[in-house]
Amino acid sequence: MKKLKINAEKLLPIALAVFLPGLNLFSNSALQEEYELDFYKKWFYATLVLYPLWLVLEWVSKMKFKYKFLLIILSIILFTAIIYFLLALFEEWIAIRWVFIIKFFSASMLFLVIQYALQTQKNVTQLKIEKEQMQTENYRAQLESLRAKVDPHFLFNSLNTLRTMVRHNDAKSEQFILSLSDFYRQTLKYNEAKVIKLLDEIKLLESYLFLMKNRNGEAISITIDIQKELYKMHIPTLAMQTVVENCFKHNMMTSKAPLKIEIINTADDAIEVINNIQPKLVKQPTSGYGLEFLKKRYELLGIYDGVEIDQTEEEFTTRLKLI
Image (cartoon, rainbow, N blue to C red; front, side, top):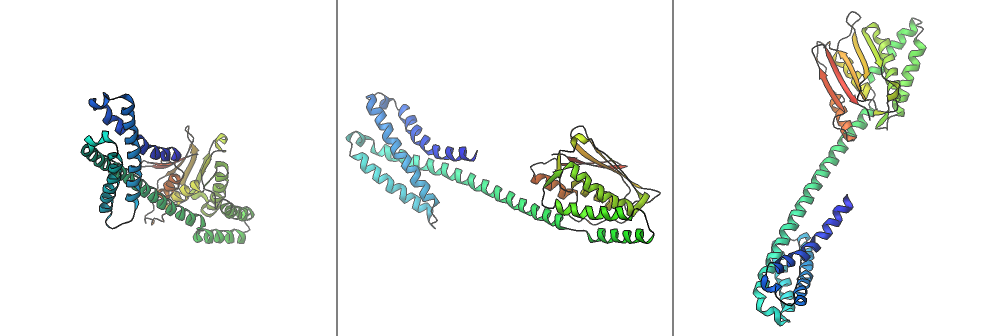
């Protein structure tokens, strides 16, 4: 596409140099009545004049000069004088010299307008590209920060839970240690990956949920029901965990009123995380790493409908698109 655009830009001045004289000659009935060879000769001469004119104007327009407009006018006058002198050598052109000068200046103005429009379009396109690149780099920086971020509270709480389990000779202590180790090992393993297979994301999530389940006991009820046919599809790294963390962050959970989280797949190859709404009495501050940032991560992958949210009085549903 880029190569095609460059070729079109190169062909434009050639096309103008060829067709503009043709339109002028064909619209002049007196010139059409001339001998055919002279008719096409004048067309050829005009083309030879207009194409260099385009190149000269383009070159002068790109020069960094304080009085660029004055330089352009002087260039047109000088170029006109040279062409005028050359054409004056032919007697058949003498009768139309002033007409030629007027048409030559008109062509110059037309070329300048077209070149200005093209350059303006290039500048606007370049600004858009630079803006998108800056946004992309900003999102990437935030993503790297997210990947490098290890929640100390989660780690400390997990270690305190482990200490309590060991002190009470809990049979699940060993499994808790393995899950904690596996969780951080998997997090480091996929640290640089933009997306991972759904199966790997589920395994990582299960390690995280095992830790949370052991810390909170019956205060959490979690169900995962995803068809195995979707395991080979991909999802942004830690996307499901981000959504589940959002559930824990904004909702209360007790053994009498447990937080219920259901993770399922939809018919159109998406993952839905559904939780009952039990808002905390004290609203939690926004960290910047939640659902809005997850939307931006999808956008970096060229997906602008990756995250969809639906909320009722009783349930909060987050829909994640599989890739």
